[in-house]
Image (cartoon, rainbow, N blue to C red; front, top):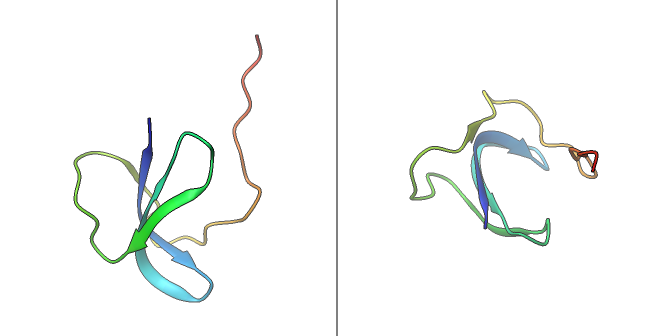
Length: 56
């Protein structure tokens, strides 16, 4: 499973789309990745190490 994140800033590059794989690593990064849905970043900076945790 992967997550598509649209329109974020990465290392000073604005308007980048990226796909994060099941292992939590970026598997693709470029302008206008193909795919539907995803999370819209609204131009915000993507922060390394930011993660969501769930309780079991």
